Image 1 (cartoon, rainbow, N blue to C red):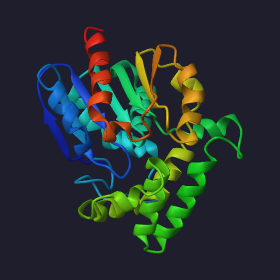
Image 2: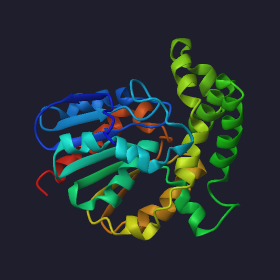
Image 3: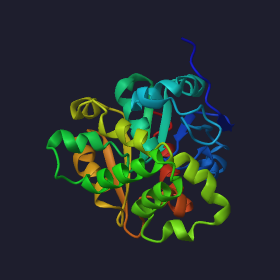
Image 4: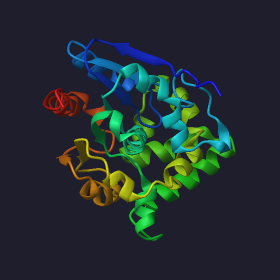
Length: 267
């Protein structure tokens, strides 16, 4: 079967860097990083399923590996070896891509990858991802009933804090609500991903694991399981930031990513 071609923003020349966005976002979230890196790197920022100008959501058959497969043409275009950068859901895609195809990855920079299945694999509920589990189920039910505004409120307020949806500019709400219609599928992809922790622990490439000091427990629970298992990881916590740090404070986060990529440019 022919691979779909995701919409792609691309700029620059040099080592390839693939940037994968969060849920309820698009490739546009990496515009600042693209501009920052393009004088020295070839930066590729695609839209995932159901996001921006990406392919339509594939429905019940969708898995996290579906996202990796969608990005195969982008990975090929980036060359081997290439860098991976990801935030939240995009971070989960980046980590899975690195775990499944370690030989083609130079280094990985992620901000709170949401690989919730790794927490459940350590012991079922109640556990550290119960918060997002409850929100995902409630938001998924609202979206299935056609109430995407309620689904978006639940999802955005969980990750960004109470009142964040109300504070969102009205012009941005329709696109976010439309993307959050897929929240149930996002949760299933992340909660049911079968790749064991041992496979991620076999990633030898350098990993920059970025965290927010004010992030929800669900994100921190993944970090507590995944980060110590990675043999070549550096953990950096931005104490004043939350889970959406790459969007709310892009200059701060992008500077850390840029430094990491430069350090590993020749590896």
